[in-house]
Every structure is written in structure tokens, then in C-alpha cells.
Amino acid sequence: MSDIAIKIENLRKQYKLGAIGGQTLNAELQSWWARKRGKEDPNLKIGQDYSNAGERFWALDGINLEIKKGEAVGIIGGNGAGKSTLLKILSRVTAPTEGDIWIDGRIASMLEVGTGFHGELTGRENIYMNGAILGMTKKEVDEKIESIIDFSECRQFIDTPVKRYSSGMYVKLAFAVASHLDAEIMIMDEVLAVGDMKFQKKCLGKMGDEAKGGKTVLYVSHNMATIRNLCSRCIVLDKGRIVYDGNVEKAIDVYMNNHSSDLKTEYVLADFRRSLPELGKLAKFDSIKLLNKRIARFLTDEKMIIEFNWTVNSPVNNVLIDLTLKYADGSPVGYTDCRTMIKDYGVGEYKTILEYDISNLAEGIYIVYFHLSEINAINELHDIDQSEQIFFEVVNDSFDKINWQRQYWGSIRLPQMMEVKDYENSLF
Image 1 (cartoon, rainbow, N blue to C red):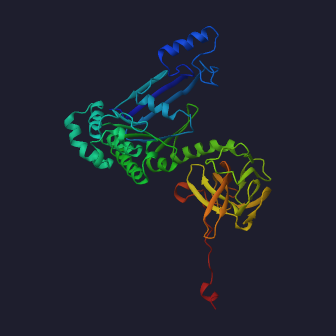
Image 2: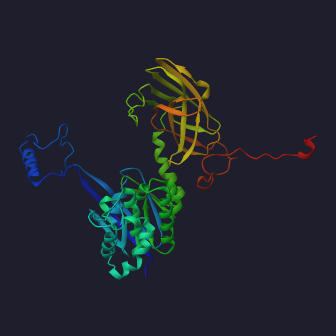
Image 3: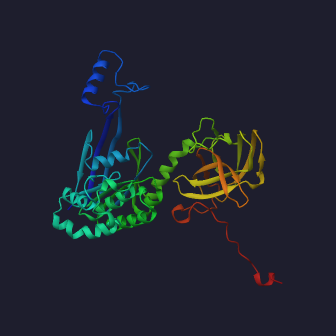
């Protein structure tokens, strides 16, 4: 018997932009007839046009892949890389344009919150419906339903129509159903991001147990920590193609290195859209520049010199600049600020140059977020403005430094331990 759960050969999926407008049939015919005569479309919204109508693009472009039974495979890549399209094809939600797929086993999939649920049916009824879709008998579902309800943590609401569930409750019940019913292949697309942290940990443990028990797991996520914890193999997609397939840590490095084109040294923030409307009102960053660099790549013995040009629109008190540092996979690294610049600032334009020591950072690509903040007497910070995300890379400049294993040791290089010689005599 073959040990291959999924085999894909030359899989391609093409979409046509503007092919379907989502209108009524009558409106579609009106639009078609107007375009045919070279007239203005009566159903177009203001500012909309058909400049890209009929344009085609390949969401997947030549995927060749084999996944063995019992493997836990992570799929990562940027937005638009083709991850969700691949899972939709495997789940038979959409059909491929070209290529062949062989699947050995039944599939339980969660492509988005509430997939496969009927809003008018209760949680209990949806469990039975999903079991029937997978070909299970009522007796088989009866044997599992109590463990499904317990795992979902939704017993109090199990006989309530799921249209009244929160997104978190949807995810809990949907995952419980997908993981307990008799399917040999589990497909998950970033759905665990909706659940709370405790339930996410519980789900990851369950998926790990299912993989060890022989189930095949495909998991799409932007959270590299969950990919590390769950998967034994990882695939990186970019523009519809596989650019890496293999070791999880190497796959994450490939994905992270896609940010290398973002290592610019100057950021003009005049048109940067802040995350909150109040940011940038009292004072705002105009530009941020990494000095003495043509590309934001640093050796570990270099200092980062940052020039901030910023404007105060209304007097502010006790202002400082701080930074939040993350690794390129989104995992937190740390926080620091500049207390020496704290003072009151009147209306006007300012230039501040700060130095940041990166010598304790392990090699890799990092994201830094700068903030203009007011600080009160009890060290509470209130953000006045924020920067966009700024990428920089740290490279190992010495053969004396050990090859860093981030998955075990994190992003910070601790100072070396020093041998103390003749300690007892040094006390006197």
C-alpha cells in the first residue's frame, strides 16, 4: 500500500480579473451590452473602470508535490503567494485549471471561520451534518460527539444556532469537528488565529497528536512559532510557485530573506497612514533615515545611527522616542527608549539623532517600530505618533561566533561567560 497521502503534478490555477461582477443577471447583461457598444457602463461605481477586465493571472503556476501519510506540513509565504488557493483546490472548493491531483483518504478542512457550517442549524446538528459529509454513519458520530463537545468548550451553547456564535466559538467547534471525525487528512488555513491563546495551544497539541497517530496535516500560517511547533516539513510559496520544500528552519529563513528587498535606509512618512486617527496630530515623524548606510545591513560590531525629522504641531511634554523590536517572523525581541531626550517641546520642527547598539542581536532580519511618546511620572507611555515598519539585517562578522540556532536560543546573544582564575586569592 502506498505511503503517499497527496500527490500533485503540474498544478496550475488561473483567474480572470473582472470576469464576474457579483451583480444580477440583468445588470450583467446591461454591462456587457454597454461595453460591446463602447458606451459607459450604467452599473459601474464612481471611480471604477474595466481597464483590467479580462486580464489573467496564475495564482498557482506549476506545483509538483508529494506529501506522505502522517506528515505535518507547514505552508508559508507572503499574501497572494497561492497558499489558500492550493488548499481550496485540495479541499475541492475550486477546480484546477491544469494538472493532476491524487488524494488517498478523506479530507477534513477548515479554510475559514465557519466553513461547512449552516448558520440556522445548532452546533449539535452541524456536527452530525459534517459527519455525514465525510461519509460517517449516525452511530459513528454518536460515539464521538461527547468528546467533540468537550473539546470545543461550547457545551453550554451546543443546542443554539451557530449564527449566534462568536468567531472564536465558531473556530472552537469547527476545529473540534475537523479533528475528531474520521478523516485521514486535516487541512487548516490560519483559522487558529481567531481563537484565544489557551485554545490555540490546545489545538496545536491535538494536531500534533493526530500527526503522530498517522493523520496527515497541512497547515497554513503566518505565525512561525506554530509552524515550528507543529510541522516537521515546510513549503515556501512565492507567486504561485514552490521556492523551497524541506527543513522547517531553512524554510523560515527563505521566507524571511524575501524581506531583503525592504532593507532601505530612508523612510518618508508624510503620506504614511497611521493605525489610529489621533496619532500624528500633536506631533509626527516626517522622515527617518539610517545614516552612513546604502542598505540597512549591519555587522554585529556596528552601531545603528538613526536620524529623525519630526514636527510638533501643539506643545507636548516629557517626550521621548522609543522602539519596539521584532524578528522578521513577528516574534517579539524587546523594547528600549531614549530617556536623555526627555523634555517639553514647543511648536516647531526638530531633528534628533540617536544611536542604537545592535551587538547583542543574533544574525537575521529584524523589524523595528519607532514611536514618539509622552511619559508620565509613573513611567506610563502614551503614543503620539508611530513609524511604519522598518527592516534591517544583522550579519555575523566573525568566525569565532557559534552558528546560531534561533529555534532554541532566540534572537539575543547573551554575553560570554568569563573564567575567573584564582578566585579565592582575589578575595583578599
